[in-house]
Structures are given as C-alpha cells and as structure tokens.
Length: 192
Image (tube, rainbow, N blue to C red):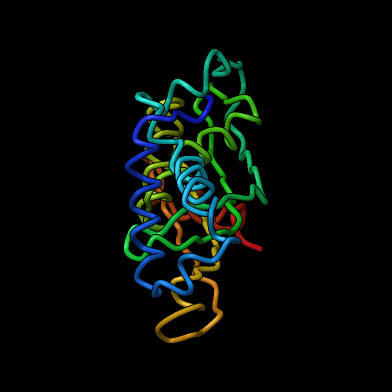
C-alpha cells in the first residue's frame, strides 16, 4: 500500500524539534533543511505494516487445499527489517519457517508478505516471531510450525553495550509441536 501522509506535519515537526536539541549551529545547517521531511517519510515507510488492519489479508487467496500435503515444508532465508520499539532503532535479519501441513499450504511469496506486515511496525523480535507463527496457525491449521528469526539489532550495537551480535528466536506452535519426531524435523528445517 502507498505510504499515507497522515500525521506528516506532526512527524516533521517532531524531527525538527529533535534536531534542535543538537544546538542552533548544528540544527540550522543548510544540509539539514529537508531532513525532517525525509525522516518523517522514512518513519512512515518503516511502520507501514500498521496500515494493514487485518494482517492475514495479505495472504489473499493463496491458501490451497492440497491432497497429501502432510510433509515438511521449509521456507528459508527470508530477509526482513523492523524498528525496535524501545529505542526506535532498526533491526534486520533473516527468517526461516518450517511447517507440517495438515492438507493446506500457503503460496510461497505470502510468507514474505506476512513477515513484512508484522515487521513493518514498532516491534520486538520475540513478538514478531510469535505473531508470524500464530498467523500461520490461523491461516493453515498445520500440525506444527516453527519460525526462526536471526537479527542484528542496532540498539545493541550502536549504543549501550556496543556489541555487534545477532539474536536468534524460535517460536513453535501447533498441536503436534511437542511430538519428538516433528519437533526435530521443525528445528532442522529452521536451522542454518
């Protein structure tokens, strides 16, 4: 969807005010004249997922009933980026999804679309994995699903501890997620 201009004046004003905290000499530089408008537009783009009222709608009509669809499906290396709700700093990484269908499958491109609609908002990595896993359970009713996210957080590397590490989270859902064989296959499907 196109980026809405709602609240753009308020967002630009807020960025202008933020820049003013750097002092008059810095904030009045000619090079920063259009920065509030650019920053407000970027912020709207990074939170565009909030404009999708019903996130599952991005799957459209790409949920298919398929006879015999019961074997592991793994969709790997889906890139994503989001905005940390604690510091308003970006985090980015890769998602790996594995699921055991129960006769229903999702069009492959829709995994990326679902991930994006949840990632493009103020977010926590843990919640992002939870939301994606829950959405897949609701859409497909799989036997089990695993969502693994591995991300680099600038809120950790560019401030505070200053440590450039990666964080990995794994969300497991579904009625058979605790079955030892299924769990092992799911974890294998989302491993590097």
